[in-house]
Length: 316
Ligand code: SD4
Image 1: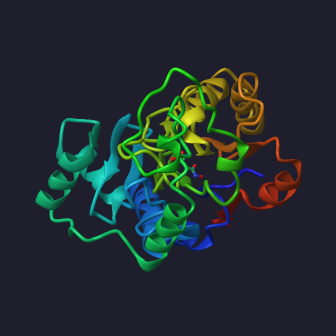
Image 2: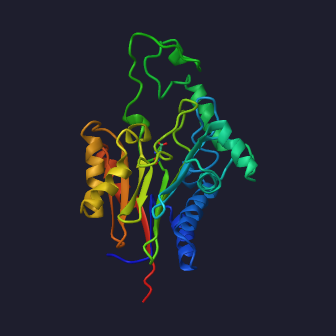
Image 3: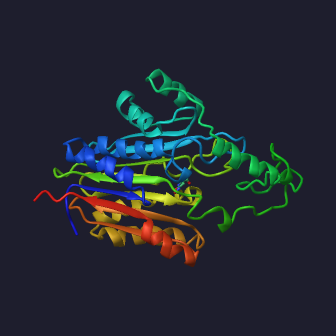
């Protein structure tokens, strides 16, 4: 199974894998591969969940989260709640390479990006407007709020807190078509490894919401002496468990990539049995694995088939 170099990513985003692959084949770095691969999805708006024009929040705006990590230098760049800039993974890389910081967020991150030469554009599209207006017509049910008053739950915010708890969150909000972040791992023949993510988060999220994807150790993690991992799924739950970090640490302790992914998912399922998500792992010898966690039995098979795209280049 092991073969180097290696590109592994979540979901059947083949053109992203192909882009990353061609970078490695032409001698490019693993960072370039991850950036190009994820950027390809940002341009193609993979599954509507990566890049512009997807997942409008409660105010109709699309905001982006992304992360890139160099497993050999342990440098990281991340951007969260990014507005008006399409190339979130590029901005994440600029945070890593053009600042001493690790993460920038929100409006200030967008201003930083503009200063770095990224073009400011409206991330809204007809599709995102349509998703948003359908939601408005459905009385703006607050998908991700709890403890809101019944009245408030039937009108668009601002939502008022209330003593009586209204459980609004449930499996209906998570599933194969509402969570399709790209998470990517690239490994070259010299043992260089990098990981990254890019997403537009969740439909109808509360403005300002940041998911797991840009959180180091949650959305992705890489360590050049061990391997890397990346996650996709219900970020509000996943980020509580740092599954990518956990998977890398398990591989460090000797677990093979499949077992490491499985343990990272099991840790979450112990607390949230209806959680939906997946982790992909690769070690520096080029072995890789995946694990999908879901209560939606009918979705597992479908999801399982499609969760990972991998391309090898056999140098022989
Ligand atoms: C998030 N984890 O923002 C992301 C969404 C996702 O596959 O993974 N989609 O919660």
